[in-house]
Image 1 (cartoon, helix red, strand yellow):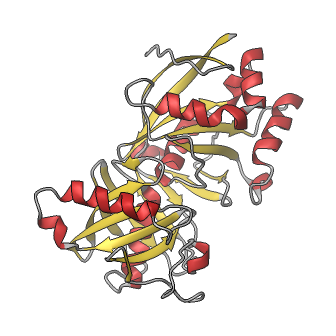
Image 2 (cartoon, helix red, strand yellow; image 1 turned 180 degrees about the vertical axis):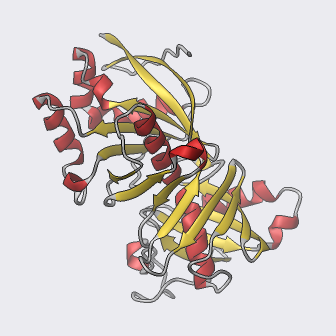
Length: 332
């Protein structure tokens, strides 16, 4: 049985996402069937929709779960899908995020800004300050409506620095001390968890080589397979421009090289502070291939806040069946 379902595509700093609204799913019998069995089909759906050549093309899939629908079916599905999210009942909206390879992810800063843009533009959220329920807890978001897409701020929360919580497994790492400038695969890395695991390398001499991106990619893929990172890892290679500006090449687990990674930008700043390259309470410009993110690690809250753009790209319709998700794109 085939069904047509609206989708939207959004981008933040070049990181792009397919956005599906759970309200749209709940409006048809076929959509209800997909929503009620989302966990069964989500991996395959994400892989096909995010495929750059055979699908819409994106770095990840976002399922938007508004709070407003009072239908018993929708409320039961929503409760089943996000019922284990910390403190979700005190949030204004919820989401489920999946990487392009179908693997789940607890957070994605650029995706959260795109979710915020979608929710605000579609009047799901009327406030300019609200909370999103995520797998790693509530996330505070601010929208500056006067500046449209240019200034959406996301509070990424406090970094987790204990190796066991990253998780990082190497003999030289203390259970209670941050892993700063640890040698892993002969690469000097500082490791941080920002809702997902990251390792950050600063000012490698490879930056000055003509094939630097290819070498960085190979290094990152080896790190992602390393037993030191039992849940794999996002890898950031950073070049210092000046004390307030840094360039970053990122290879995300589940996605590969991406134009931007907000949690990676957050991890970069945390690592920079730990290595005494940066200071807390200073706004840092993080230049990524898709654009610049503005990042601050605030002493008062111990949280990392990121400001950047998020904008609508296009919308269309996907055609799917529950036996094997089939993609048909109709752009508008």
